[in-house]
Amino acid sequence: MRVVGVTGATGFIGSSLLAAFLERGWGAVAFGRRALPDGAARGITARPYVLGDDAPDLTGLDLLVHCAYDPQADNVAAAAALVRRARAEGVPRVLFVSSLSAQTDAGSAYGREKAACERSFDAARDLIVRPGLVIGNGGLFARMRDSLRRMPLAPVVDGGRQPVYGIGIDDLAGAIVELVEAGACGSYVLASPEPLALRELLRAIARGVGRGIVLVPVPYALLLACAAIVERLRLPLDLGVERVRSLRNLRAFSVPSYPEIARPFASLPSVLAALA
Ligand SMILES: NC(=O)c1ccc[n+]([C@@H]2O[C@H](COP(=O)([O-])OP(=O)(O)OC[C@H]3O[C@@H](n4cnc5c(N)ncnc54)[C@H](OP(=O)(O)O)[C@@H]3O)[C@@H](O)[C@H]2O)c1
Image 1 (cartoon, rainbow, N blue to C red):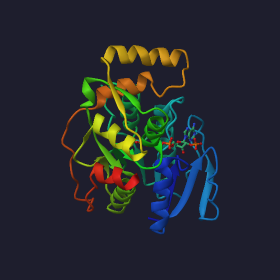
Image 2: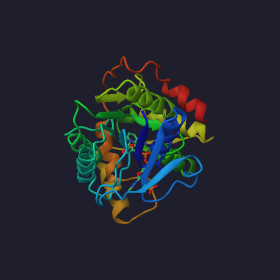
Image 3: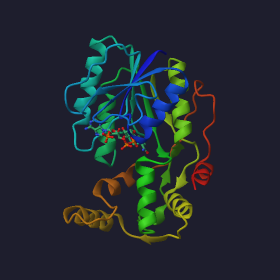
């Protein structure tokens, strides 16, 4: 691999991928609406990219990693435009950071949108990774942690028994490097095989920030109605309709293992303990 371009390079996952690629000695181009503060010093080339605008200049890339996501934008059209441009400019393949929740019948609009984005990619040449909840100092996990730090109280549906599949950020970056080096294409679920029940995850996160947690049992319909009110009144609470609907995406399944990925993923309790 010579040159990898990353959209969303300023984000939690994109910045970790960029660091992993640089460690392998690969050239890196960061596509984004703001520059990485230390990008030039680390030898990273910056090219402007605003998701939703025209696809950026992709010349000279051996791989484009599409990691940016904007809940306010048309992510499906943006992914399609990037793929078209990559093909036109001879980029050999594109890696899309999708999600474990990517299903055409997902409970959340996010999951359905990710599934729709995936359709722009060609399984015979591109690589689609579907991570579970990524555990580290950023992204959704950090937002959950900050919220529990502020207010150690969480409404739970069905006692919070829903299985959450996740992966540590270092395991995710390592697995993606292995897949790229192996020339893998098609779809890969990236998650530790043993899930944690949502209530156990919430308890572990609260323990990690030195708080106890109160889990409040709530029926799904009531929680959804409360989330709608919180959104409508713009109350400063970490509760949204999408987040509640995403509970419907949490179901048990068997996480496949892949011959291209040699390192076993750390268990979620050990990843959480290492972060605390
Ligand atoms: N975190 C998880 O647990 C998780 C799990 C599964 C899948 N994923 C997927 O992984 C990807 C990255 O997630 P993350 O957790 O790293 O999120 P993040 O930290 O919020 O990063 C999002 C990135 O997208 C960029 N971005 C947002 N809107 C943009 C726009 N309009 N134009 C250009 N760039 C824009 C952001 O740039 P700015 O710095 O300019 O805002 C940032 O670099 C997403 O596709 C997400 O769906 C995440």
